[in-house]
Image 1 (cartoon, rainbow, N blue to C red):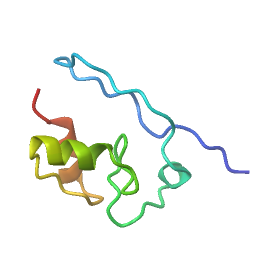
Image 2: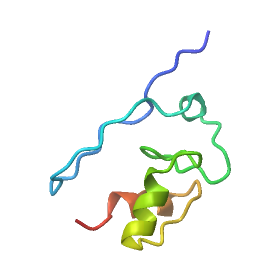
Image 3: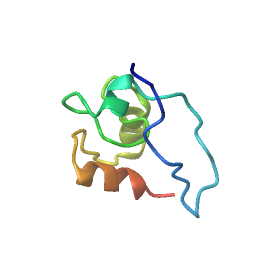
Image 4: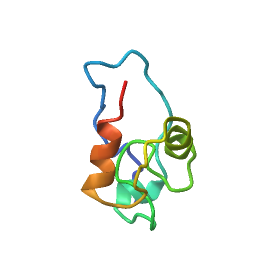
Length: 79
C-alpha cells in the first residue's frame, strides 16, 4: 500500500516576510522517482509554475535539475 505523505520539513528562512502555502507535491516526490527537470525541494515539480515564474520575474537564472545546486539556489533567493 502506498501512503502519500509530504516529503519535506517546513522551510521558513528567518528573513521571510511572506509564506507560500500549497498542497502535497506529486506522489513521485514521496517515492523518490523524480522526472528530468524536477528539483527535490518545495514546489520542485517541473510541471509546476512557481519557480519558473519567480525565475522570470526576478531573473534568478535558476537551474531546473535534480541537483544540490538547484536546491541551494532556491534556498538563497534574494529578499
